Length: 433
Image (cartoon, rainbow, N blue to C red; front, top):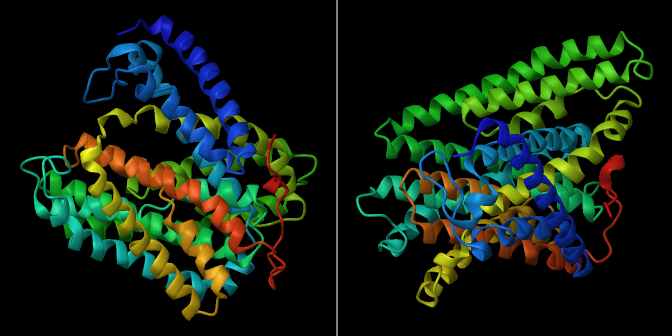
């Protein structure tokens, strides 16, 4: 326990450590032709318990060791909040930069691929749950339904913020692969968090079906509210003022709305980042607005806030819990990831008209679990539904699929064609040094 007066000092010191590590590992990842985000996630792991020992304190456990002295629980809570705010704002930037006409033109493909990559993890999660029925993976006393729901959520988790960053780094956000991937990842993310909500309800004795139906109904209602009320009102407001002379006021309004949208999505239970993405998608694209908003907001979000989020996610991961006896379980989980995401996405993409390389690229990308797999694993760990070993397996699955995604996509799309949509290339696509 540290005094309230010392919290700010710890937060500032931790931010310096995190940003330096993220910058160094991000550059190293780029030098190895890997996405910078892979280095930023690895930075969090390397400055965490895996190398330093101990563990970070949470709401349910006390911290211990060197990691707890570097990141005491009170300071870590602030770091987590900074990362979450940055994630909401980043997804807002992704949403506002996407061409809605391109999304509408690809809505059938997005719907079919999202359905395939949403249903398959659920089916495989329930089918494979008995294969993980040992004390190394499943805590004693956890029911079949609860465990299966969390395993399915771990397989379904798709790295929406990580994929958005990866697509921007590679200049693919303006291609059919980019449009479909972001659309599919957004929908599958909602499915994954509905599974988490159902698993949490099952773990705490609540009604699974009632909880999922309620959250889904609230999510649909919130989306309609944004489309039918917020969008027209925003259109009237933005159309009645000079965007060039009042960009500060406009930016303040949009940031407030993005954070409020993230709050509502978080309370509904479909994660705050979906709220930021939805708000960005309903902002009317008045001339010059996107460029001005990105010019003011993009760099600070990408260079400061996002690395904090990725690093904080890595700080709660301890790879020391793994041993060689767990290799079969790890291999099985990786096979399940491919079978649950890559294969269904490829088949659905081909069925809806994508070329073979494009369909494979979408499959590779949506297979990435990213930090959302970490969130699912941590939720299950805190509820006592998953063991530390399975939580870390989720992390390794996310990292391995992310590391493989960059080279595989480069190979599959060695010479990407200009998309028929002529989708607008946002100013934020250039990778940062």
